[in-house]
Image (cartoon, rainbow, N blue to C red; front, side, top):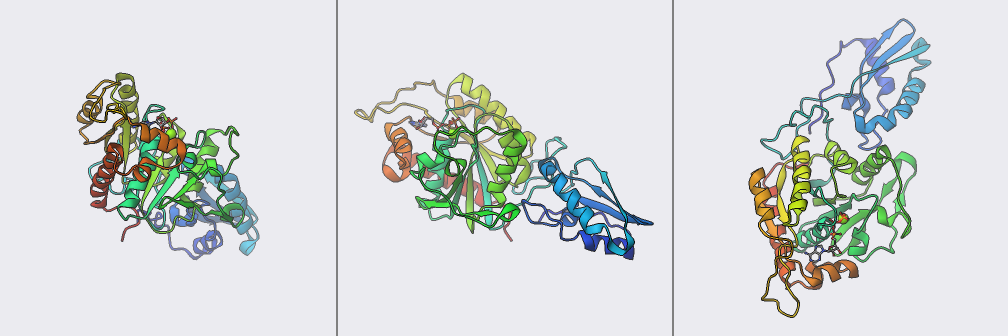
Length: 382
Ligand SMILES: Nc1ncnc2c1ncn2[C@@H]1O[C@H](COP(=O)(O)OP(=O)(O)OP(=O)(O)O)[C@@H](O)[C@H]1O
Ligand SMILES: [Mg+2]
């Protein structure tokens, strides 16, 4: 596990006693102690005053007040301590914060990547992204998850499109409500089991047609809850469907969890490629491996003439992007009616029309991704 060794402090009994008081303070997301994470460090005593440094990574900034209050309560009164001094340190960047399963990729000089925490029981996290909206990210994420499950893998799907969740509709479970256990920071959400996969989405927690309006920091918290406060169980793969763009959701995910990698979805056309290029560069900059490019809507196959192909959005774009980035072109998915009807009807094409060209392309994509990511030492694996 990539936990930073806390700076070896002087093994002084006074420090040890103060640390013992703070030992139950934990990160709400991962449950790990703040001392173990190095978020509380340089604990010491000066007469009646306890002093420590608080070094929260940016994604945990919302926990600051709770931690400060809890630390004060834990220390005041201990062996004559009358005052608690907290030094706010810059967010830590532990030397081991590189990606798991990302041989050859550094943190790209970003310098702000905090320690990433694996999800217990989840072997590989694969993000489906793109700089552009409407290119088929959710369609790919949902069908990829179903295709991986059809191959016998234990699969989770996290719909990280908090503002515009589509996965529940695409999987036909928009009317279901997941079970929530516990309260406060101890809450655990049970994913919805459907189509052989386990899924969570904001769409399951809000009423249909209700707009979701939150600020960036809250969005970060929700994504972290979806990662660490969901009872994912044992999963070979967790597929994450991201919203369009290179914004807070991408950043939150990439900073929080070690990923086997991201796949970039694009259509063959120029404007889609420009946005996809930005999306791809962002992951590389964050030290997340890019597993390859998926060209969606490569060619239209008319339902009444399945031997015909019309390249509505041009051709060659996916291959060009993949070549520029030095990553594989993982799939060219046709634009087919059953893909769209399957999405709207809640039965992904991989399950609803398994012999269609698209379904076969998704199954091949699943095999390629499984082979690509199964070989790397992914998060949580022994
Ligand atoms: N290969 C395809 N063939 C036919 N229809 C498709 C295909 N891919 C996607 N679609 C349709 O295009 C629309 C947009 O797809 P989707 O919602 O998956 O895109 P997205 O990139 O996730 O969008 P957003 O950026 O809004 O999250 C949907 O109606 C979907 O059914
Ligand atoms: Mg989407």
